[in-house]
Amino acid sequence: MTPEGGAAGPGAGSGRTSGPARPIEAGASPAVELVIEPRRRPVGAGEVRRLLPFRLRRMVGPFIFADLMGPDDIAAGGGVAIDAHPHIGLSTVTYLFDGRLVHRDSTGAIQTIEPGAVNWMTAGSGVAHTERSHPDDRGASSRLFGLQTWVALPGEAEEIAPSFQHVAAERAPVERFGGSEVRVAVGYGWGHESPVVASSPLVLASIELVDGSPVPVPADHPERAVAAVEGEVALDGHAVEPGRLVVLTPGSTPTLSGRGRAAVLGGEPVGPRHIWWNFVSSDPERIEQAKVDWAAQRFPLVPGDHEPWVPLPG
Image 1 (cartoon, helix red, strand yellow):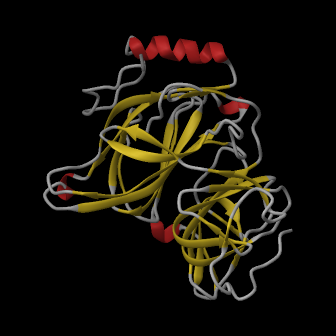
Image 2: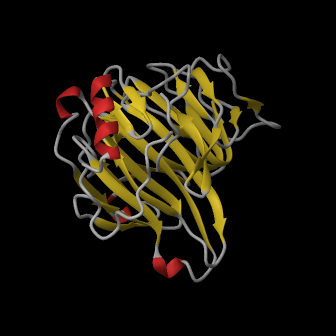
Image 3: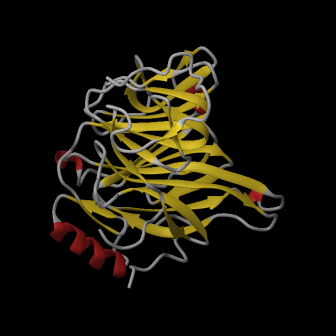
């Protein structure tokens, strides 16, 4: 996906609340540092809810970008068509809750991603890619719902050669708390480590919450945030409206409860980064060079799927 241009809390007991949970806000719990409202942004022919970057919080750990895609009901004959576009200095991480997408990139990778699986594409010195609906899905109605994030690469890896990893859903480690389930998609947490080879210490986890089965959020990483994805999610007894991102106080260990789905992301910071369109770098001059290179089509091409390509924002 591509953005627009520019730059120890108390537990929740059984997981049930007596009456409606109080809405979350900064200071509602010792674990809450900041609450970020989603901003709607156009992507391709659709729309996403953007969580990062935010003016008061540009990054959480190495995560510099996060979009919630959908949930979108796609009519027969329609579909997602994200044309060829470039990246530098980051890894893209795609995780779906519903639907499927076909990823193609300039390393030659072609991979269909389905719910629970992980696509990790490292751009490094420069990569181009596309994301499209599976051709078999276009003849019938379908649903797409997922999380797209970018991880800024550490300084020594910003210009690494591009690469691609795919890890199937059944390989992701799972921890259960009663009826609730934590799936560690990338990095490590809850005593588990994903088979995805990440660029720095981090975590991205999907949490399915069942009423009466609360889930603790460990302080495994110095920076973390919780995204309420769908349903009724509460953090330390405070309701988190779907789409909101709650940045956690360092060292806190809050509890998630309710009925629905949440995601946890974070890790160790990699240092300040500049971001413009699809480009991330510690050096603003590197971004200027990437602009020139993409305009002149000097990036690697996506085999068999490079036309049309997305021009630089005006």
